[in-house]
Amino acid sequence: MNQADHSFAVRLLLNIGHGLDHMFLLIFAAAVAVIASDFGFKSWEDLMPYGVGAFILFGLGSIPSGRLGDLWGRRRMMVVFFIGIGVSTLLVALTQTAWQLAIALTLVGAFASIYHPVGIPLLVQKSANPGLAIGVNGLAGNFGVALAAMATGFLIKWIGWRAAFAVPALISIASGIWFAYACPAETEAPAKRKATSKVKLTPAMLARVLAVMTVSAATGSILFNLSTNGNGQLMTERFQGVIEDPALLGILLAVIYVIASLMQVVVGKLLDHFPIKPIFLGIVLLQIPLLLLASYAKGWWLFTALLGVMVFIFGAVPFVDVMIVRYVDDRSRSRVAGIRLAVSLGISSFAVWLLGPAVKGVGFEVLLWIMAGCAACTALVVLFLPSEKTSEGVAA
Image (cartoon, rainbow, N blue to C red; front, side):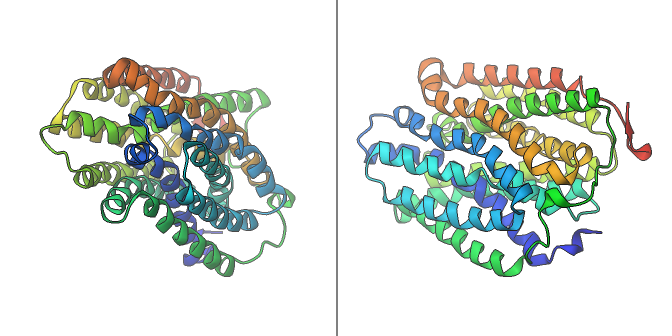
């Protein structure tokens, strides 16, 4: 079987879904300063904690989402994803108070939790080159990150912050209707299919791999969430006197994300041919000096440092999904992905809650040092990943 077993429309929509998933979670971060002013807050840092519910549900919701994906069907869950996240994002655009906003964003997070444990296993279950498929999918996801920065800036400038939520919401609902027609109904739920694991592990090795997956995903998610939610305000602070137009800063941030996203395709291609451990370790180690450089940089030096930081933060994203494909049978991939996402994103969601108070209390310089420490923790954990002999179908 190869990737052509999914029609082009289905693959396109699954990749669009990943972009929308990340975009919806970051529109608030891109618009928080304007919303805070509209709602009567003195600073964006005071409103930022109201968005934490989205990230908590994004993590915790992965468990029931993954279970339903395996036992009920991934196609059905993806239709729920597209329509549900679109409708809930429309509700965000209608909110009038901070607590209404918090509730609506939490609902967005609940539907956003569907994509990763359901959409990615659906994409790779028929792929001969899952690493490349995951890399391209990751590229699409991070285009969503870039769009959150750029499109939000322009929509706020031209129409207002509510349009920044409403326009992509309508696109998601339309995508869900298209997906329902384009994706054939599943003949049976994934849990009822034959075993398809590629690398056999002893129970002890599998437990070790799952532990590495969970911990590295948690530390990686902390870095991803702190950077993607904080980069806009960091650039606003460090570009004062150089560039102060929010739309232009949004374009610069989008450029960083688009270039950095290409790293996922490179990493995905490499992982189809080489072992995971040395590539993963090298990418994580390179995050550390770049984060330290970004902690002191200003203006165009910050732009350069952030580009390097995001290249390697985004480059680390495909590893956990590739590990799941390589080591976990397709019949239970959504459930395994859901559990590890719940743990890792549940932990990292607190990073979003702490972002505003942390920046207000200690500043971006100290925060970036803490992020470098998280990268060092990831590198330490990756050392415990078993080596591979993929050609023989065993791990050592």
